[in-house]
Length: 177
Image (cartoon, rainbow, N blue to C red; front, side, top):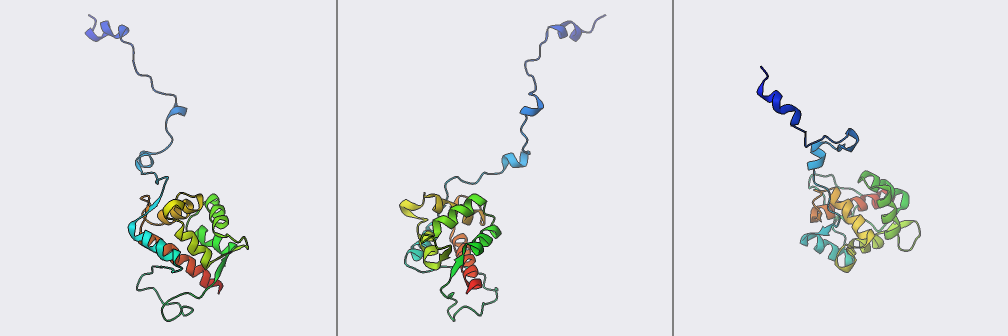
C-alpha cells in the first residue's frame, strides 16, 4: 500500500528556490540591525549656541572636572592663541577616526588662507559655519559628522560633542605653542 503523501508528492512543485550563495547578504544580522549614521548632521539648540559663540570669536570647550589643569593655560583656562599645523591637525583627526576624505576636506576647508596651518580664527569660523545656510557645505558636514561620530552618532551634534571637539583642537594648538 502506498502512503497517501506519495501519491501527491510528484505533483508538488517547490514555489521557492533559495538564492545562490553569492546573492546572500554578507553582513551579519547585528550589522543589518545597527542604525546607519545620518547622512545630514545638524546641531542641537545648545550646540547652535556654541556655534554662535564661535562666530563671536569665543571658544567653548568642555572638559571633565577631574581632568588635570594644563599649566600652559591662563588662570581662566583659556588657551593662548596658536595655530595647528596640517600635520598636527591630521594627527588629531586620526585620533578622532576621520577618513582620509574627511581629513582632506577639513584641512582644505578650514585653512582658508592656505598657509598650511589652521589658526584659532579659521577654526572658529569653521565651527560657526556649521549652522545656518552654510551647515550643508561639505566642510561643515565633514566637521559635524566627525563630532557626532565621536559622540552618540544620532545625527545631531550635542553641545558636549561640540565642546569636546573644540577642546581637542585647543589641546593640539597648546601642544604646538
